Length: 468
Image (cartoon, rainbow, N blue to C red):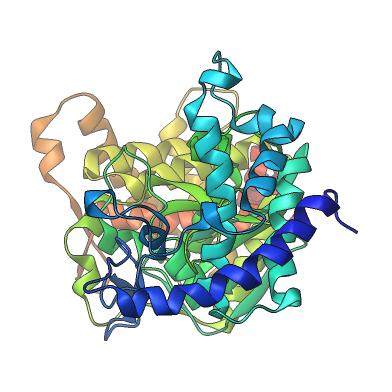
């Protein structure tokens, strides 16, 4: 049943003897040490989670080590029956030697290796105690032991990837987008578990990172197990499918006009674990800074945030499915530019991204009169598919103004850059960058649903004849 029956047998004989010693040792401690940064989950009035480090729990690892003055530890694991047998067993296992040995160091001189093997035993004791207390139950221990054994003997590791969706709420707890990709509510245990998953750079505010109630989940990924304990492939942001993740956030923007982003990518191991930490759910991953800069401006203090309805999710699904199945480079390139525009801080940069995306979708191989042709094609598509919202002459004129603004930026025309708004038919004004964003959203939605419009000649035929 187990890959190493001898080790398992020793452990299930060892734990029932050690666990009952812990609570008396805690009571005998005058001022027991508590765990550092033990995550206690709380929810803000706006519904987003936060983490407090109080109250904490007793750090029982200190009971297993000599206290001040070299007095004996309160719970002496090394003196317990069976401990040295287990330790020698671990230190002789080829898989343990290969994984935990310090690179380029002889075994007899490798103090780290001996410490790591001792820590494995201690880790089992701590995990069981934090989850289940001091009464041993075989079935509960099996649930702790099997994932570790699976990890030690594995060649490839199976896992799901999840990406917390920042500052957006959803009406539903679960929604399937396509097979293997879904949106789900983040459980309380995952909220606690992801708290410490951070990279050293770039710096990300904890209040931003934690402001998510739901996550995008990508299922059934595999990666080669690290050859050595000192390797951490899952901390490298480059290994993750950023293009697919960004496509989701872009389709969310297209369907709802809600700007979101992500600050973490999480690994959910499928029945394996390399190391346990107290009672916290075992997750891996890294932090990334893929969200707009204004998220850092105390956005988490807002009381109200937009919520994605079930009807909107249907549209998200429809657009995402089209993108997911599309092999059109035009769509992928335009989506990438649109996504980048949502992360920009300067309007000048945003408008350039939006125009490039529109040109990629609707231009042709001929470079003459590109502004005129784009204005005609955009007004044709929008008025055809949303006639109640868009009047073709107004859209045509607006696109010309958008291009004039963009040209002023590109060519350094100071006066043009000051004209940042367009007056609409009802005598109100709208920022040029907002209107360009709106037009691109609608055009993307149209061509994703009906890819035939990626052929400029199809739009030109519609323009000239009124039909296809």
